[in-house]
Structure formats: structure tokens, C-alpha cells
Image (tube, helix red, strand yellow):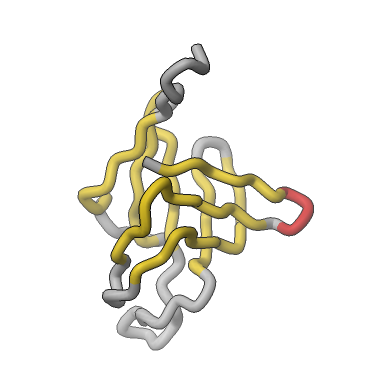
Amino acid sequence: MHRKLWEPEKRRLTFVFERPQRIYDGSVVERISYEIRRADGDVLTLLLEGETRRLASGEPIVWQLVFVEPGVYRWRVAGDYPFNRVWGRRCDRPGTG
């Protein structure tokens, strides 16, 4: 589980994990942050801070967080790419209603 920290004044979105998580490069992190590149309706276009992966063009991978229904989101690489396997769902913490 994680919580999201929106920092619109800094154009940043940070995910803070309840437990350390292993990410794509094998490192273990407690949080990851994205620069918000664009917001269009139900889609946020984001660049992961420190992203090292590249497209065939040599450009860094830019991600899209797509809200597919209220409280549910999916991830995909920006452009004409399919969604990955990650689903996110908004949940209330126990005792918060």
C-alpha cells in the first residue's frame, strides 16, 4: 500500500510506501517521485525522477497515470502503448471511514 502526495505548486507527485519496495532497477525505496508534465482530463503524464530507461528513440520513458474509473488507475508508457500490469485502487485506511 502507498499514499500519494500531490505537490501542485512543484508540479510533483510522490508515492510514499508503507513498506520499502523493490523497483524496476532493483533498488529498494520508501518513496518515488514524478514530475507532472501534463494533466488532461483523466490522464497525468509524468516523468519519474532519475528515470534511466529509454525508448528506442533514446528519449527517457514518460509515464501516464490513467484514471479508468473513480478511485481506480492504471499505468502505461506515454504514446501508443498498452497498459502495464499495475492497477491502483483508492482505499480508506482502517479507522478512517
